[in-house]
Image 1 (cartoon, helix red, strand yellow):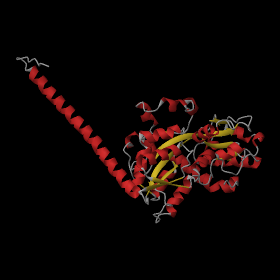
Image 2 (cartoon, rainbow, N blue to C red):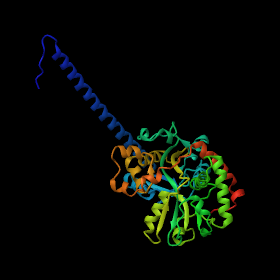
Image 3 (cartoon, helix red, strand yellow):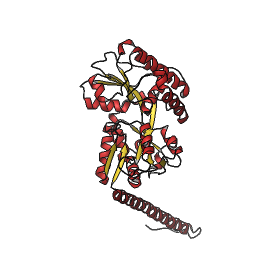
Image 4 (cartoon, helix red, strand yellow):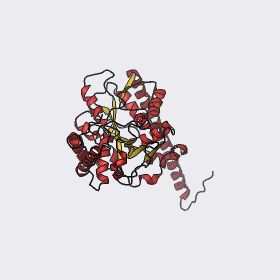
Length: 383
């Protein structure tokens, strides 16, 4: 392409200089991009090699039907060839923390490398020196409000509390929290965890207080205890941790739990019995779960590799397939990375319009009230 020079203004020389600068800049940019990509590939290769040298990863409290974890774990094993020890799938967040404390000096398979806990357990585990910092390569796409600035914990997914209902037994499906107090639901309602240790159950009690018009935090926590005290006194509350099997068998035909677990159960049961998953009209409380690496992880490189996997596009979409909203949902959607068939299976967006995300302080205050007063106020030994 010829360059015409205006002899009077030397504009051509300037254009040539600009062209050379542009070419140089583009060459440097390409080189930097290639260098960055190569450096990342090298770093990931080194991390994978170090993890494979450790040979295994120990996780805890990850039921396969929770948030699509079965597929996520299988994907990780297939990609990296590591053995995954799965401890106590039905444990609650508090149990995970206790497992770290109890196994500080244990380098065997009973010591968890990583944890997946409710949001309020992230800061407290950091304060207690139970987690170690690590920032995944997709760190910048995780909202600042959902991660510790130093990398000691970071949000992974969220959902909202819902009513999972066996329609073969419950003919009038409850639409809101207040409905649960009706006499027709005697011996029918269960929490999906122990409210003294399970983040899911703690937030369910908290949500019932919020639905009653109380401010999130200690006030709603106290009101939630009173709500469940009444449920228990009426005989509506079943002192059993509700699971898909007890839902299907009719032992707990109404379970208060995360929407994604209810939707997974609905799919698994495939109409036998029919299951409704109802997002209540009021007290729509969303809960963020967080990932962290144990400060005493026997397999720290495998733990970091696990984090890289679950925060990659592949891992995040794996959670989405399990009906969870991954923490990088906005970034994935913006870049057109969410498969259309996966998106089509999610509940209507309007069901989440009223969702409330209680702050860490609010959750902490409610947790304090609920875990310490459940036995004295409600008196139902959920197990």
